Each structure stands twice: as structure tokens, then as C-alpha cells.
Length: 200
Image (tube, rainbow, N blue to C red; front, side):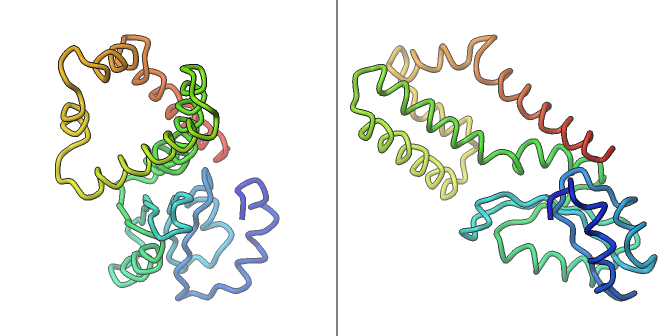
């Protein structure tokens, strides 16, 4: 369920949960305090934030469990969440908002990058369908290369970049003081703030 309807929907869901139930919430901004108030006091509650690549088994989920969740219950939640992809655990509940900003909303950033690359390709003279195919396949391929490589992204970027070459010219724009990095930081912080606002 969406966090905007949690207030009305949680009491209905709580009717199906008993004292030994492990509740796994994937609602942005819906805190353990809110969830605990709706469910049995003994219910173990895990907050998690997956992302849409979970639909193809390639998601990444950030999760948090407090001290009331046993190791066995945490393992149950881990197994459930792994059905959608990888899982990382954070040490504080507040960090789930940052997870939301980076990976929960992150696929939209990547899709926007593909849109922007395709539009730039058209501006450079390519037919729209060719530009979109090139942009999509480039992002797909780069993602797969990164998945299969043990090298950090910064090294993979350097491996593509010849001194004074075409990639270096493009990176000069993207890595300028007002380039991609500060823009992405502002975007992630905006999403993180919104997740906090949803918590009320």
C-alpha cells in the first residue's frame, strides 16, 4: 500500500497479524512507531525499501530491524526480500529515508538519464529511434559491465576515458562544479526530505 493510505489501511492489515507475525513494511516514510501502534505490541516489524527492478529479480532493498526483531525473524525477512534481489541492512531507522533517496527512487533517475541521452542524440543529428536504442543499450550494457566487474565505478569510468578524447570532453561538462554530481546530490536529498515529510 502507498503511505498516503496507511492510516486507513493499517488497522485492516493488523487484523491478519498475530503476536508471532513478522511484518515487513515497504512504505516510504512510515515509521516503526506508526507501524507498532497499528499492530500487536509483540509483532516483529521490519522496514524495507525495495526498488522497481525487483520486478525482474534485480532489485536492491535497504532494510532496518530494531532490537525487538530476533535473528530468526530477521532471517525470515531477509529470505522474503531476497526473492526480489539483493538486500542491505542499515544500522538506523532514519537511514531508510536515505535508502529511499538513493535506490528507492533511483531507477527513475536512470530512466531520465536515458531520456536525456536520447534527446541529446537527436540534437546531435540522430533519428529519434536510433538515439533511444543507443541510449537504452548503453545504459543496459554499462550496468551489466559494472555488475560483472570487481572494479569500482570510478575505475570503470576512467577505463572508458582516453586523455583529451571524446569521453573526456563530455566528462568535462558532466564533472564541472555545477555538473552532474551536485545535481544528483540535490535530487537524492530532495527525495530523502520527502520521505521524512511523509513520516509527518
